[in-house]
Image (cartoon, rainbow, N blue to C red):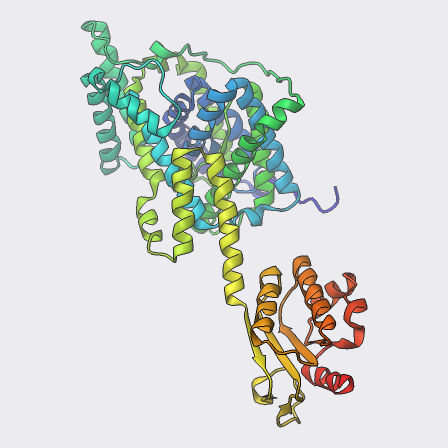
Length: 556
C-alpha cells in the first residue's frame, strides 16, 4: 500500500549497536523481566484466566511489541487497565469470545497505524482518559475484596453495586489469615523502595508470603489461606497455537468490546511511549507502534494470551535501569519464558490474598486521585465528561463509558466552538484602521442605506449558520443586500454550506441579495464544488470588502 510508513526501532538501533549497549540492555531486560513476573500473574488471575496466561501474554506480546514497535524502550504486556474489560468478556462470551475479540482489536490497531491515525488517538480529551482510568482502578479494587478478606463466596456478581451487596452478606465468613497476608503484602510493597530501588516490592511480597504460607502448610497443617494451586491448574510450558472459528455472528457481537480493547490499548501504549520520550529525549513513531500493538494482539491470543499494550511502569523500570534499545524488551520476554519453564511449578504456592494486595497497590497507583481531584476544579463541561466517564465505567462497563464519553466530549467541543465563533453586524461605516482586507487609501467605507454587513469570526459550520440566521431574524429588517464577511472563517463544512444555501434561498424569496466577502481559498473551493455559484452567482463571491461594496452598488 502506497504511503505506508512502518519503521520498527529495533532495526535502526542495531545499525550502530555496541557491546556496551548490549550490556546495558541485558541488565535492564533481566530486571524488567523480574518486575513483570508478579504483575503478569496478578493480572492474569484478576482477569479471570489462569496465572500462566498472564505470563504467556507478557512473553509473546512483550517480544512482538519490542521487535516491531516504534519506541526504543517500550515494554509490552498485560496491564491493569484491561482487567475489567477482559473479565467482562469472559463472563459473557467465555475464553473463546475473548480470543476473537482480542484478534479483532489487533486488526483494528493495525488499521489505525496503516491509516496514520496514531496522532489522532492522542487527541482524546484528558478528562475521558482520567475518568475511565480512575473508574478501572476502583473496579479492580472492588474485584479483589473477596481474596483480600478471604470471603467464602461461590460466585461474585459482575455488577459493581451487586458485588458490594454480596460482600456485605458474606462478611461473616472473612478469613483473618487472608486479611493478615494481604495487609503484610501491601506493607512490604510500600516500604520496599526505602531499602531497595532495584528489586520490586511486589516480587519481595510474593516471595516472603509464599514462603510463610508454604512453611505453615508443611509443618503445621494450617491451610486456611487459599493459594493459586487451590484454584487453578498451572501449565509450565508455552501452549500450541489454536486458531478459533470466527463467524459473522461472533464478529457482530464482539465488535463493541473489540473496539474498546483497541482504543484502550492505543491510548495506553501511546501514552506510555510519550512519557518515555520525555525521559529519554527520543521520539517514537506512533503509527509503527500501533501496528506492533496490533500484531501482538493478533498473535498472543492464538497461544491463550490476553490483550496487551505498552506498560508505563515496566517501561519506566526499563529506562531507569539503563535500557537503550528494543533488545532490552526482547530479553525481558526471554527471562519470563525461562522463569515459566524452570520455576512455573512454584507459582501454585502463591497466596491469593498476596496477589490481592499487589492489585490493591496497582489500583491505587492507577486511580490518579490527585489528578482527578484537580480536574474537578476545571470548567464545568470537563467536570461533566470526567464524572460521566468515571461513573459509567464503574456502574456499567468500560465499553459504554468510552462510547458515551467520546460522544459527550464531541458535543461539548462543538458547543465551545459555537460559543467562540462571534457574529457582528455593521450598518453605517467600516473603519479601515481596524481592518486587514481594505485598500489603504480608503479613509472610511460607508455602507449604503438598506445594506447590512455581517462578520463571522471563527469556523463556519452548522451551529454558526443557525446563529447567523437567528441574528438576521432578530434584527427584523428586510434589507436589499446583506454582505457576509468570511475573512476570519478558516473553514466551512458540508452542513454549514447546506444551511448557508438555505439562508440564501430564504433571503432571495424576501427580495434580499447575498454577497460574500473575504472568502478564503479553501472555503471558496468548497463552495464552488457544492454548486454555490449557481445559487448566488460567482460575481457575488468577493475576495475583500472593497469588491463586495462595489458589487453592492451595482446591485442597488
